[in-house]
Length: 315
Image 1 (cartoon, helix red, strand yellow):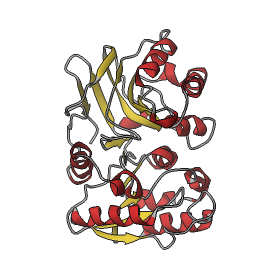
Image 2 (image 1 turned 180 degrees about the vertical axis):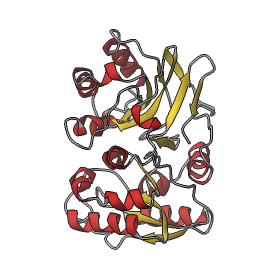
Image 3 (image 1 turned 90 degrees about the vertical axis):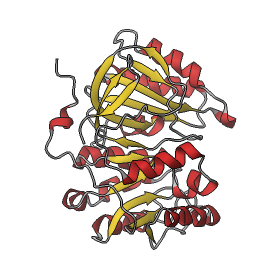
Image 4 (image 1 turned 90 degrees about the horizontal axis):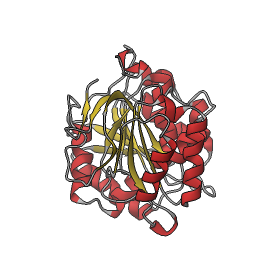
């Protein structure tokens, strides 16, 4: 049986080339305002990695809970997407605001020249939209004026650099020292899609939400009490998403005050998928706490709980 997601066989799937030392990368703020000290530390980390760093013109702007106006934030992002000298784009932080830009993104520029784009949290909206409209494979990982600025642990730093500078090939995304939990065993194939749960649900019903049919759904969340996580997961079930996917991979789930909700969410997901018992692995070190492993978003993968592998198959 062919269990691949429909886009995995699409010739328009766009996998950007890995970054190399000496490449010029851009840093933009598409969501909330940034802390300047964290930004400076994050920029220095990129320079230590061997990249030439260029800031967007409006990165340090602040307008209430946004990093400047919609026009300023979108201008910075589109400038980076269009500039042939820019090889990769890093998002400064999350918060809120990316969804306000989706209608004005230059998707044609992405189709002409796919580039690495790195972020998570609110950036989930950009990543899902770019995949839906362009088939672009992006990378879910630490934010420059967030976890990078505060200091990455060894595992997160290793996977951040490796994820962006090495070809995906047939990489095993489970090849790490982590206490992964098999909630339901099995094998599955599909494009790995998802991200921050609240953004995944927020895009449902829009033209920017992907087709999750036979996808490997990965989810993480922060600051949400368990009942709200329950509500969002139930929304995914009622929308048919949990019935459509081929497997689920869960990252960090943190409630208010940083409370660990992982095991409670494990029980919820098992309950909500009992009528469609897909393979589920939990405890993946990705999300709003460290370690935060950088993973490709949109690439076809194969999950095998017998060998505990999540192998890239579409690069």
